Amino acid sequence: MKKKSILFFFLLIVIILGLGGIIYYFYNEENSSFFNPGNRYDWSQLNYMDVIYENQSDIQAWNEGYSESDQCPWGFKHLGLDYFFKNGSNVIAAAPGQVQEIVDHDSTSQFNKYHVAIWIRFNETIRLGYNFEPWSTNESDREKQRQMFKIEVGDWVSQGQVIAQFLECNISAHIHFDLVENQEWYCPRKYFSTAGYNEIMNLIEFYHPGENWQLCYS
Image (tube, rainbow, N blue to C red; front, side, top):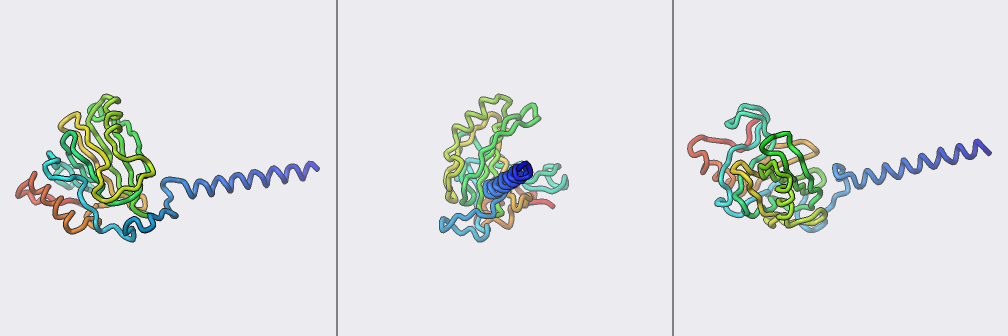
C-alpha cells in the first residue's frame, strides 16, 4: 500500500510538471511557435517595414542609428534606431502585428531613468520594440507616457496605425526602436520597404547633410 502511494504521488508530480511545461511552452512570451496572425496581413516575411513617424517634421534630430561597435559617427555600440520625436507627436506602427508586452524599465542613468517599451510581434520569429525614453528622473513621467499609449497588450495593430503620442521631458527624449529576430538584434535595413528605407535615409541626410551617414554600421 505504501509503495502504491509513493508511485501515485510520483506520477502526480510527473503530470503536474508535464502540464506546467506545456503551459509554459504555449504561453511563454519568448516562445512563439504557434503565433499565427491568420489573414490579417502578410506575415511570411518582413520586407515592407516603414518609419514610425507620420511626418518628418515630427522628428527634431537624428543622432544614433544601428551599430555593432564603436566604429560609427556616434562612437558607441547601439543595437537599434533612435527617433527623436517632438512632444505630443504621433508614433505609428512600422509594421503590423500583435502587442505582446508593455514593459517598464528603470535605467541606471541619472538623467534618463524611467522608460517604458511596447513590444509588437510580427510573426513567429520577429518582434519590434518601441522603447519610449522621455528622458526623465521622475517616475510619474513614465506613467504620463503610458497614459498616452493608444494600444493594450493583446491588440492587433496595422501598419501605420497610431500606437501612442510621445512625451518629451527633455530635448534628448527619444524612442529607441529595436528589430529582434530569433531573439537576436539586427540591422533593420533588410526589413524596410524601398520607400521606408528612402524616407529614413532622407531624414538622416536632412540632419547630417553631406556627411554620408549610414543607417547601420557593422
